[in-house]
Image (cartoon, rainbow, N blue to C red; front, side, top):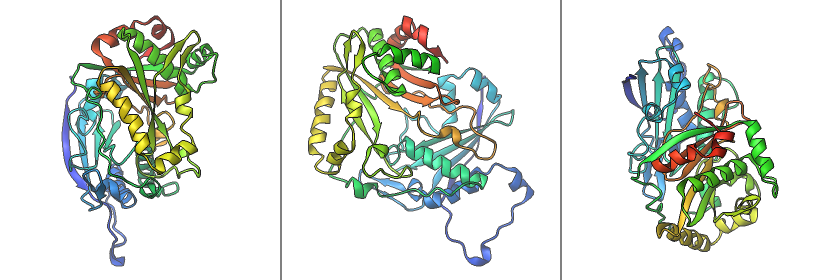
Length: 388
């Protein structure tokens, strides 16, 4: 049985300007042999200073340099035991807290890091950042900047903070539909799509030229709907990245939540699911409406939310992290063996990550317990997907 012992809990603050006579601080041999996480994190926070601040309601972040919570823990097993048989309840231990039960949006630390050491010498890094201030791209940018600082190589990554000037804040009070984050028994499982099976699935969608994302999400939606045996109409929500869709394009290192939901009611035809247009319609013209009067956009979203809350729609939420360069993160020991998320209590929520080779996709699917059992027995799921 695995045991995880907390070694230390500290608060790391951004590195402050140092006087000239103290510019050089000699490291001891023990410092040189130790992991570079601690000091490099402090230096990285100098540039990513909002991540070391505190949220002030739904308006701003107080950049008070109060710091990031930094935890070190030691597991009594080999890292290979986790990689060979990853279990959701075990993976949660390697995060600094359970995101299903705790929150980062209530005046707490915006960023929390946990470094986990294994008996073999392997290391697992668990990172949580409040979604109020950061999206997946921001997380990937922060990790890239931190790892470069730790390794001492590569160009320094400087974040851009122009988002509020491009999308001016307003008097907004939005809430997640009550039934999305649920107390219902939710099961999370990982399903692996290799490149060959993705190509076969793409060939089945003859009426379009779908991307990998569109192919995999269409397949999951169709199979999950069959598993639920729900005859009501279905609503899908896709988190669409905006950086590359804007004109002019936003800098890749821009910090914040730079995405928007494409919401649609899919239709099944003899040729497959027909809903790809909603994602592709989020172009530079659409994004300009978000920069102007967003009241109409919120009215549309609120209408969909109300339909969901009233049970008119069964909602499936998709988010892809597959394009983020997590596997390029290198603190000095090479690239990660595996990058993953954990279970989240979002009913019908699906997160997609790239496989290490980059040509496959890992889908982390969250379904009600009885629906997951049926989903796993779907003939097409058995045929085209590996379960991990």
